[in-house]
Image (cartoon, rainbow, N blue to C red):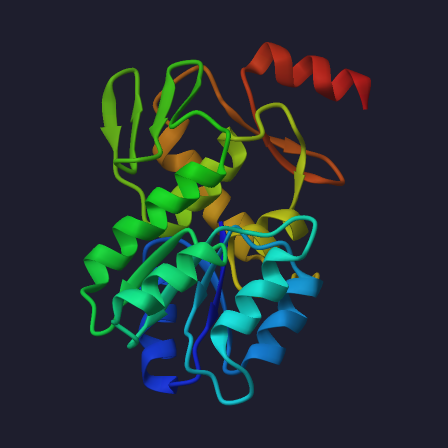
Length: 232
């Protein structure tokens, strides 16, 4: 999941970026409205966190421009404006939620997760064979046994389980999970896939994570993975 934060105060923007990244999200930050709109035109985001007091334009103007697009992400307004009229206007203009500063990060994270669930017409519980991923509680089990995953490991596995049987390139994985472009040199995806294989596939005869030669990786049951490989 990729989130765009439009926030002009660097201290708050850094705090949000670090917190959301530690929760497993990829985060881009813009410090003014126009820079944020430019990023929205370049990238598909799953959520926008929007401050209203921006240096170049009112955040509500940014919101209107976002909502005028054919496809726009859920929007969480994060603002020091705490008057009822401000909150009502923001929601009427199309914001999905409104959180007043100062705020507790745990509450913001809960609202982020709620909005992402609302925007995703995808099951909250993913399963491939005996591997189960609970998207809400962020827990993973295999054959009923819990598996502890680091945030980035969880994000990669969730991405793969949302696309079972689909070969995913290293570029696709990096751009979905990390806030960076794949430069063709880094082996970061291979390292994390190796970690996931150790935790998920090592103690079983049914391997779920498969290498797709010349492309990247795929998660599926062995028999279906073999059929896919034969078709390619």
